[in-house]
Image 1: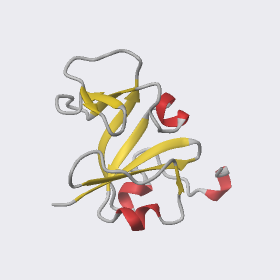
Image 2 (image 1 turned 180 degrees about the vertical axis):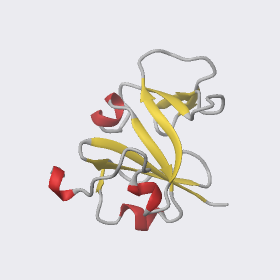
Image 3 (image 1 turned 180 degrees about the horizontal axis):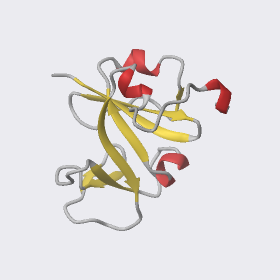
Image 4 (image 1 turned 90 degrees about the vertical axis):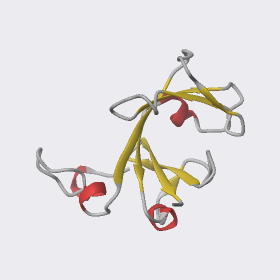
Length: 127
């Protein structure tokens, strides 16, 4: 866990270093739920139902997990922020992973990392 002195402080008007220093781009916010939502899409290989991403003007994605879904309890219970990165392997180097790198759909690689107790999703898209 990071201590207050191990992180550089930023001013209230400054974007986070993930954006300014690493060039990561906001993609979505994932929110765990137990409630089914309209137009859910079931990702069978991940055992998760997702909804809202295509229609939310803010990038909110609701996530409902099957009881036997293999993701960590932290991802099932704590909202996460997701960033698009250019090089997933470089972005996760030295980070604590919350599971394996996966592919929710063709052309997408995803990793969940742990930052100060919070889950953060990183996505790389092949164009």
